[in-house]
Length: 182
Image (cartoon, rainbow, N blue to C red; front, side):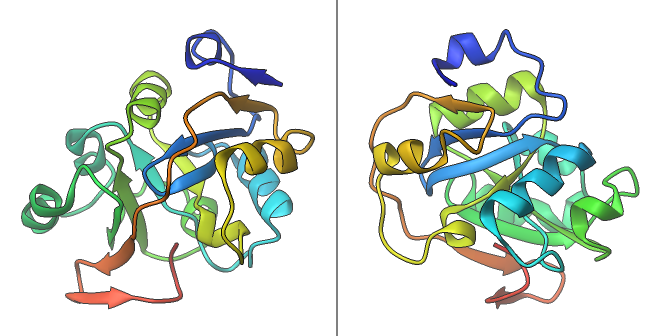
């Protein structure tokens, strides 16, 4: 179902998946710790189930609440966020193992996209599949909406933005990550 951000904010997202636009391009998302919806993301994207999706938050403070050592994350967060960089660090125990796929770390991202911030600030942290998880070729927001409209519960109308370059950085090991997180 296609809807505006304002219409989405009135919905119950429990067990649901959404498609929306960010500075990384289209992302598929669902509520944090919603096992049913996370499994739907893996089915829709055909992503390897052993590799976790990152968690999108609306604010840096929300990101700090998810991690075991926020002081370690802070300098990286202040430098890279908001923006298209995913930072990986040790997670708190309330971030369920089915979110992290059994890893002790979680990838976190604070978007600068007004749509993503509005959604994450309203619903709380979201598990998101970024374009790298479900696209091998370049695509557009309009094409993504047409492709995924029948697979996801809600498609949020947004601008057709060009994705910015992004990367994943492991804060605990002070290294760029290439394949364990997206």
